[in-house]
Each structure stands twice: as C-alpha cells, then as structure tokens.
Length: 96
Image (cartoon, rainbow, N blue to C red; front, side, top):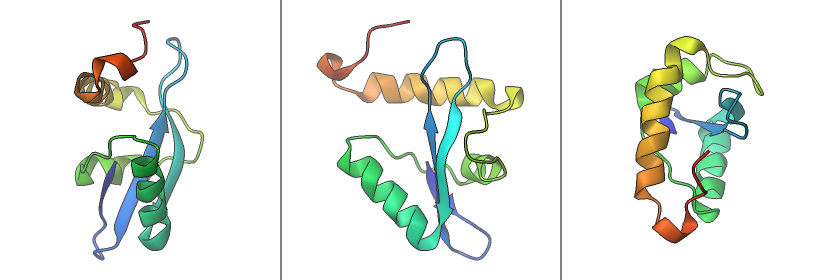
C-alpha cells in the first residue's frame, strides 16, 4: 500500500499473511526512496499496490513484523478479498 505523508513524501507499507490463524504482519515500510523501492519490488513481483494514504498512515505507526491491530482487521480483510478477486483465477491460492 502506498500514500504520502504530511510532508509530501511517498510512503509504503507491505503486509504478509501466511497463516489462517494469524493476522497479517508488516514486513516492509518506508518513506521516500525506500518507499519507491518497496513499490518497485512489489510491482516486479506482480503484487498489487493499493493507494490508501489514510490506511498507510495507520500502518506506518506499527513496527516491522508487528501484526495489524484488531481495529484494522475488517478493513484489511476487505482489501485482501478485493486484491484476491483482481488476481487471475489461475494464480489465486486455494481458499483456506
């Protein structure tokens, strides 16, 4: 996910979701040039980059490897479903 901070710097946060019993975790985050590198790598890997400045602002407050807080479960779940539905059917992982 990407957005801009109050100083106009690009910011990006990457989440990973690996186990149905765990919440997604922050696996990368950064501002400026680092944010651009995170976005470029996601694009190179075929990962959808969603522009959500308000959500990114909240996620930037978390530490690396920190699970998203329960108050963000619903919005992140909706985003993950949306991204899943965007993916070509043959590249989708099987449902959990």
